[in-house]
Image 1 (cartoon, rainbow, N blue to C red):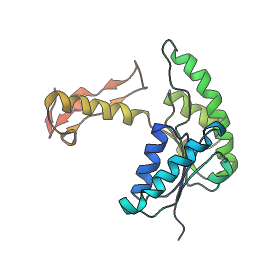
Image 2: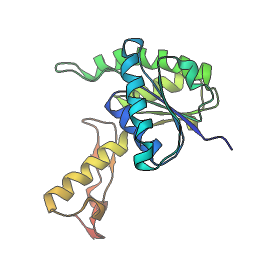
Image 3: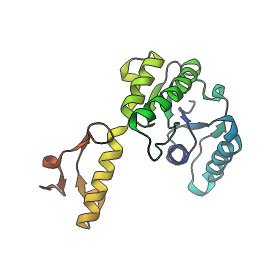
Length: 197
């Protein structure tokens, strides 16, 4: 049976880290895509991951490319590409810039992997996920935004640090958009089953 295939669009820190985790856990073969001026970098990162396979004991294919054709027939495509928010940049500015990135990326995803599921990590995640749904024409069930997990992980980490306990002992959840509208659910947060509040 052929391995599953995950393509990651954007080979920055997030994309490369995700590629390594997927490969190390042998979840799928991995293709990382980046812009043409980053060709050497994306190929180098993929080669580094691939060459670590004897050390970590995994056996999947990892490829870096600038050609979306290499993503053909992906089961899952993860979008990490986008412009990070710069000082003085409003959320609306970021939406406008990254919306055009999402449109270009999504057009290529649909062309080469029309049956895939898309996971969006690019900020602002809520707006970018909606952009990808519109641009792809995919049903909402096949386009997933990851926003809450990052804020939830940070919330749990901050509590663990403040209480000097393991993050494994913390259960808590943050809802809402990434930013001023997110809400930690303090009443349902617990430490080893003991309510936090």
